Image (cartoon, one colour):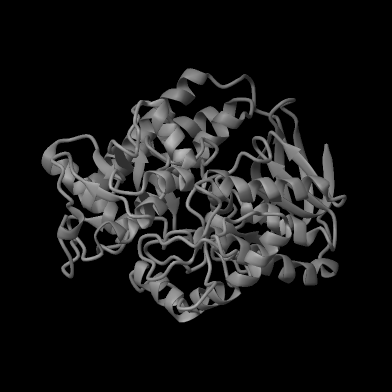
Length: 525
């Protein structure tokens, strides 16, 4: 079974949906969503979206804040581009029906988060991502040129490899022809031939035991591009959000947005001390990598399992009005945030590396674009500035759409691509094997490749993961295809890349902190 389209978009979050809406004005678009259309990383983003809106803020300040948070490892041309184009993309969202909170004078009620020198974060209460996803999903469903396949899973990208050619990562002429797509309901595999393919599959949070990401965040796009011999970079830079709600056994972890600290909440250890000023002069509003490492250190020194976020000194009515989602969630656990501290712990949150993409979102594979969290654009450097991710997705979705539509008439479909070969697939996978390997992988990554690392831990992780990789590949070769098995395979690929790139970086930089190469310019954790 096969189908044809002009644009194949894998992923339905902010990046994928906004690209689809713009590309659909020029051709047929097919969106692949492995769950419901609305179930994306975007939906779980609480804090907001960063953009310069009013004086005294300026593009120069936003650029400097981004580069400082990224420890100078950012691509300054990319930072300038994203910051300068951000207001236009905010206008796009508003025209699509996204509502941002306003103050009594009708101006946008801007928040401030860690690492920002000004108030520049637009938000919708404390569920901004859900509001953005709502508006984009409604528009996507209404567009006559967009077809949506929900509960479909992209197995692999199609390249010259599927024509019998030897494809190496060193080749400069690798081209993407589409993808094999698995229907999770019928178990059928469809060959989708496409002129342009866009990977917008989000992050890798479920690589770890504790994450704020939805369970769909299994690194599928990165793994597919890696297997297709595309370039992957900066995978060692995994951002752990400092404040997820401490609620053992619950996955994903409930995010306590950084905007709450921007609103005035402060971090305290179990002894009640405001400890962050011992680590950074910005205190509880230091960038995420610094705060996460500080909390990790506090927990290791004290032996405690969580620290506190204190909101009790804030105006109760304003607190509840601005953060109804967090207020309600905490109340379900018997915590009144106007009177009691919130127990919090760091959790895997965002990947700053990924598929290498240029300033138009093009990967190193021709006709293949990577946008959103799956990509590595150079914006975030070694640590993402809070609320820069959604605006990056919008800017790159726009640029990728405008760039790819110009090429559309020059690209022909590759009809020689064979259909999916079921030969060798003899039986359903044994779920107990998948589940066990999944758990082992998460333990390995959480224990050895977390906030603080070492050569010993990384080498041990690589050795342990190698065994799981071999077992899983053997299972994949002889089993009928399934989403669970493919996700496990993708996560193992991604875990390998994280470990290898962390091992290759012989320094502490931003989100990659190793005790063997401590940062001599700051506190040693």
